[in-house]
Image (tube, helix red, strand yellow):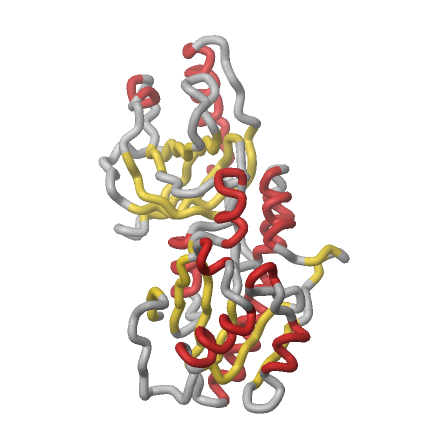
Length: 311
């Protein structure tokens, strides 16, 4: 899979143009995959490059600043697309005030048609783009009706609920991992680099890896997790705290994971943390000793859980 920013040369004689899908694709849920699968079928039949165009930051993330919660990071997104061979390339468009003011007509003609040599476009039924979301399905149908293949894919529903990134954020905020998994088509996970923390848990004999988070995510609490080291391929079971650490400082979202039965030096490694189920809510304790006892209790319960766990 090829990944590039928009301003790089993309010329290729291998294909006869591009089949493109465009959007935020936050979560890459089953509805997104339905669109990508339709694109892939057409692209392979017409020798077109399977291309996903997305933005960073995501448009709602840009406008809402710190109040927007992602389902997945860009690293998570690229990893999933590559692992499952869903596209040939990902084109990342930096989203800014300038990009927000581009008209739908200019975006279609200057970027998709002229720059990217688009021959086919696949989007969801609710897709909108351009300044003030002026571009919609009707606009695209009229603009692309003669020389290009355009298809708006019907929404997917689960139990009469439309599958969407917004709904998945709601499930995660409510710690409903089961419903989130149904909409995602897989267990919820995050990828991050292990960085140095305050070493408090290590002084208690319960060391954790601190997984760096670049974005705001909705999930909160203490969880049983699977931790995959993407650098070594080694898998661990663990107990994770996702939250604000209210007993310590309560200022910044963190993901701390105690890996069972290991005390390796893992700083700098990238980990994929997969959330299995929730143990409890995050609690603010009156004393550090109370926190220590609760963490010890959580780890004991988590270790017991994984003795009978089947992946």
